[in-house]
Image (cartoon, rainbow, N blue to C red; front, side, top):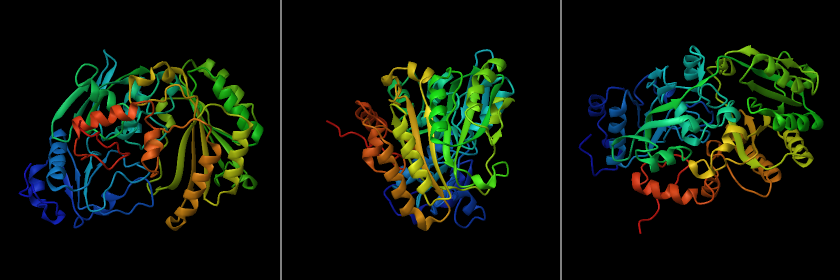
Length: 466
């Protein structure tokens, strides 16, 4: 697309009328009544004003918007579900390429595969597939766009049974920085296919994914609310480590929110919220979950037999949380870790202080570390610490708490899951890609995006040409 400004970097020279003619999708500017809604992300505390937002309709629209960014030099933000914790889904003064209207879903039932457009959310996909008793494993939040979670790897409720989201990715269609629409898979552009399985949005805009499907007619699952004592937390993690791979039970150790089924005297005090997902025989699932329920008398037991889509409860429309969070991997979990968690969540001044402990392994660990750009296959536990607060002016306080908490909880080895990395600098991004993974990604970046057009992300800069 040419907008008569190929040599210009001045944002005001964009011709909005020409752009509206060039694309099928909706072009939104500050003059439009829905501009504020369109620029608002799921996460709170981010107030950026893009010059233009384009809600693309198809891959051709994507190529047109990429061309606009390439020709003008304007910053380009890519939005699928808008859950980027550091606001990568919106630009200040730049262009937003919004995929949220691209919701095509094409199921091939005989071959147990599906093509999904990138504007779909995890809940939308899970609900549609559930009508056929099928599933793909995404994350823990239904409103997350499938684009971001897939490109980062995809750690979710089914990770121990089926692996990461990317372990069921068969192919993708991606528009690269030069405007080409490429189909990538294990045999076609295999270097790019390797990179997008964990390397984030550094290499182009994926418009469609093809996934392998699994039979998940129902699960035994839901949330289990338990009083949190050091002994109870330790026991929950021990049971999770010993659990069958059909059971992926992450736990949130957090300050109790003021929910009606939690006694008032427990509000603000430590609680365990176990998110149980047993994908298998119902009777076996009930037996497997019983030891978790026996840890302590629950405040509430919401575990039931239900469709897998029941794990994705809708977020309130006005829910825009602000969080200071850090992620890490742990090789073990014992008394030291329990003591650190209780120390930090009880002294936080945030509305809620949370530590998520997720035991890994199972199907995820059976894939070689170098098979994809997600290079943490053998890690035993992933932890996330977070302070959720309402006043943006408190950011420095809660970020300092998160940094200190991470430093106290971390063990000798480093590492990070890229989808949970915040605005922490290049060294932390590099921790997501150890043992040569970073250098391999940088070389692929140089091949497909040599000018770093796709830079508003957890950025991997292209390697210098020799």
